[in-house]
Length: 183
Ligand code: FNR
Image (cartoon, rainbow, N blue to C red; front, side, top):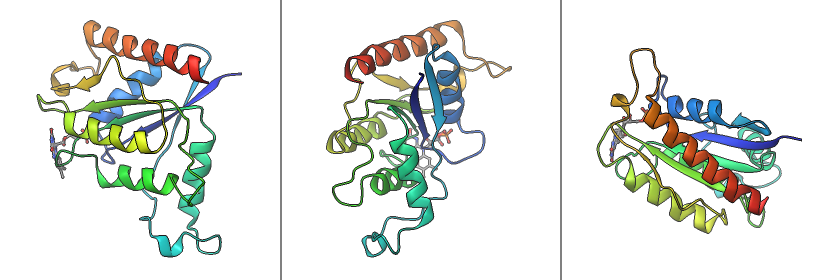
């Protein structure tokens, strides 16, 4: 049976570079792995007052169930003000509760930061890693995946050059090696 990889894209905008990179990673996944995009743009803000069985929003239940249904998780994140976008942080928070029922726990993670800038989302990448450590998600350490100046890596047909595609494949292969030791 295929192993399932959840894909979370931190940018909600149409035409997102993070989503373009995520789609490429999905294309490069070998046989035996199935990608499942987990969307969270509609997920209500976390609020402890409604974190009860009676008041739980449907969007929270849906997100938690989708996280529970995957074996590993790829995060693609832009950098917003040197951190991750609020929508992604909200998804991390919602998935971590109710208290004692952290849906993210033990799922091996990959962090990819994607930016048009030269710093390549370093701040977002490492803020995200800090949260994943607390969420008990073992996270691939090497190779690090900082995709900077992303607009220069894509040609007029929307294709990545050979070197970039090869780097993406190396990241995926390293992740799957790590994942298969854990899952
Ligand atoms: C940004 N952007 C940005 N870029 C960066 O390298 N460091 C940063 O701190 C920020 N901060 C920031 C804040 C806000 C509110 C916005 C809207 C944007 C630029 C951002 O990374 C850029 O728009 C990316 O292209 C977003 O990724 P997607 O949407 O293309 O996937």
